[in-house]
Image 1: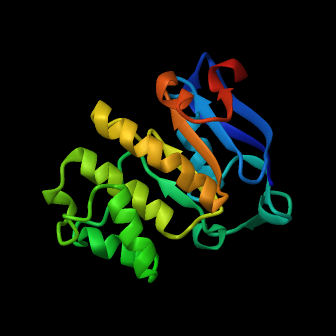
Image 2 (image 1 turned 180 degrees about the vertical axis):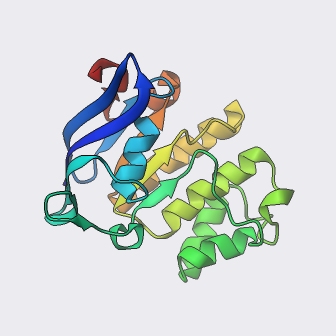
Image 3 (image 1 turned 90 degrees about the horizontal axis):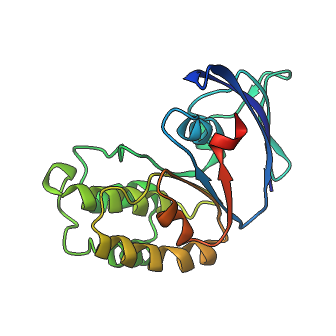
Length: 208
């Protein structure tokens, strides 16, 4: 269970600058966040992961306080141990596909399974510059899964994939998320992509 009660300051959206989010995410649930650019979707993921901090509030995960402005608590991203799929991939340019996954885990069997899932088992010695945009995005997803996270944050995960690969990856990703028992938050501006996953939709535009 992850409990969030925070205030986020946005640059500008509908003339408002402060967004209040109070919500609980049940263990193993999938929450799909829909909304236009600038509504705070990516900012929320970064705050949960510890890459940014809200103006004030609390974030509590499984009884552990990750953030509390009153008590001056703000756990590092490493201590939160979340899997994060960044919209811009955030890959290491000098690491091969294999090294990206080995950086996250030393479980060889798990790495092999992930490479097959992402159709990257034939590209293990390739660095990001020698991968297509879709392959880079698949690698970003696999790296996030490699640590077997209990919390998986996914920001626009399928935007660079063609329709065939998008369908294949979504179909194989869903049972994998269930296998991990990961609490999952998926951000997208594409309602059709979100509808492929079971779970509740959180419409950010409705918060304003």
